Image (cartoon, rainbow over all chains, first blue to last red; front, side, top):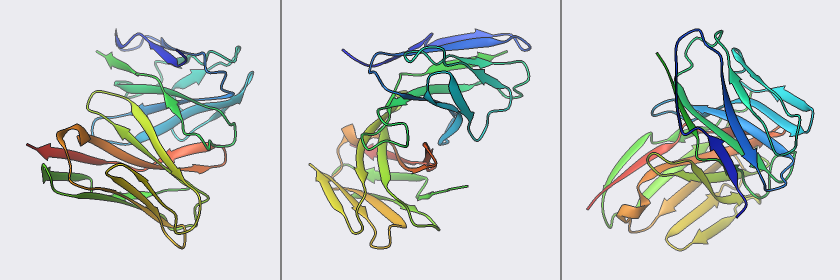
Length: 115
Length: 109
């Protein structure tokens, strides 16, 4: 079955450490996205990539970095510069690069806790 | 940047009652999408509306896009406990999807 795989589901890190969240899709989608969700809140866009080797900052990119070396993969690194990293991170992909007429497909998310 | 306001933030209903959530924008929208996120889960795409005044139905769910394409609503008829979750509207702008704050629906059996 095609889909998006995020790993791990739960992640614990000490303050000051960088951590990389994995996102892999086998849907052959061009565009991929990273969102952050805090309890009781909506989704806020961190970074997005419309094509391999290219990506753009979203609304809350500070303290995060990404790469898009392969179409299938879009890892997110949460750096020590991110002031409030504890959150639920969601990766998504879409068929069309300029928004989607088919909706976004989301992974099951990674819950990151920084202590 | 593009923003959509979604109301209410929370809605508690008795099973069998109806439920409606609304999304409003100050600017004209090219389209609007709706997603459902179950507790502890991830958002799942429900539908996209594109045309002015469009109405689409999925079983007990009715989606509407305003005539001016500045607002949209999701109405659930006769809620069931399986409808529990948070419903988000989302709009595309410059190649990215911006989400409303969501409406959390709880259903009392």
